Length: 297
Ligand code: AMP
Image (cartoon, rainbow, N blue to C red):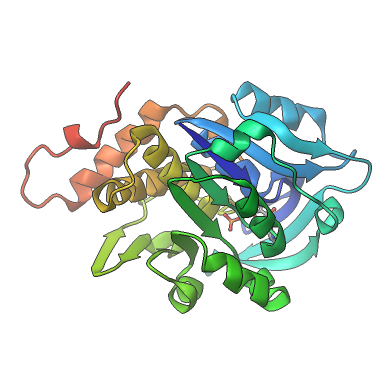
């Protein structure tokens, strides 16, 4: 069981109505790896500069993430600055994107990364996503995430990589525009929806009392979703529906604090308790359906 992920590893400056954090640990691949490593072996592909604090690398290492594919080079780490308004916490307003070393990054996958069961092409230049996809052998599931930044700057490569994956994970509008066989639409506080051949499955968002920072909700949704599938070793539609609940639970924890901070102490048991809550919220029959949601230990 393993997932190879490529995507941004970043330093983020984020402003929400509740406060501001400068140069906090961020990046799509960081959020994803932090979440998915609760379930399975994660193998990270990316690059950071000499401005990236060693304690962040150490955190991911302690999490059991395989970092042989994370290059450290002289230069600048990817930096994103964004802002959330009180009346639109679901959508970040990008203030600045500096690609830094990702502008010239050439991913070379260590041999055993190529044999991963799953590959997650997290948010980054679709040209890099393609390079990773070309190096993996025969993953059982290929999932892609992206955003409007890449739709406007590299649409051709994005369209090509989308045609090669099994699941597309984007915002609602983007996913509907691009979705092939499966697409997963993130609807922020309104939940997440899975569209497959003739099926539609929806999970509400967890009703939270505290929302501090929505950054990374999408990437940690992906971490819970793919982490669950990889650990269960089941990529059927039924498993994907259960995986959506894990993704939603994981995302709900992420936004309770800044950066990946809430996930530092999170356990798989905490996530499963929230998944059970979801089952309660939507269970009209009163039957005990929770056992079938539990992962093998
Ligand atoms: P999300 O799950 O959509 O909130 O993702 C947030 C993360 O995406 C932040 O930590 C950013 O560092 C990262 N990010 C923002 N813009 C981009 C971009 N254009 N390419 C790759 N990663 C990005």
